[in-house]
Image 1 (tube, helix red, strand yellow):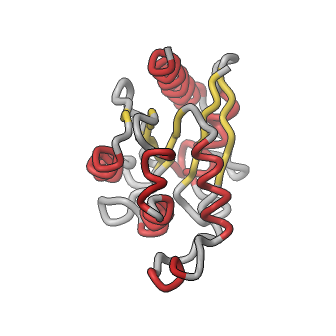
Image 2 (cartoon, helix red, strand yellow):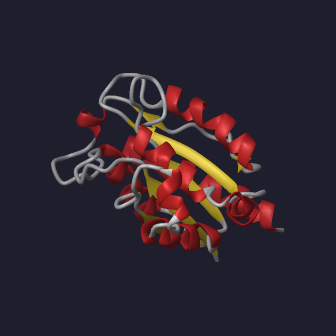
Length: 185
């Protein structure tokens, strides 16, 4: 069984990216379980706070990352790049730097996202690549999932309306799960 950890990079309860992550959990192949984590409660990075100890929300997320076979980052796109709260959470996970190998080194990672704009989250996804590189992760580029005009794709309860985007999500998660299985072999 493959255990993935999905993290939505939005704090908003009704976010399209949280809805996309729920769809990924629902549409994951039978040999794959996706646990869901949140960046809620993670403070802005501050070296003085770190000196007093790593916050509990950060410690909790670290352990979830460490126990996963791979990560799915479901990223919003703000001003054509990575949203600050999401990047801040990943930055906290690198503290102390001695934890980087345990959490990130060679860990498979996939990135996807949904946006109300027509371009989806392609720019944010590209902006994550240097972060993956510096952390020593194994990014998966087998399939793109950048849903644009998300307001038309999700209903008021956050469910995908049509089979076409559901199939896109299914193929994305299945492809990444197979990548993780090969990486583990």
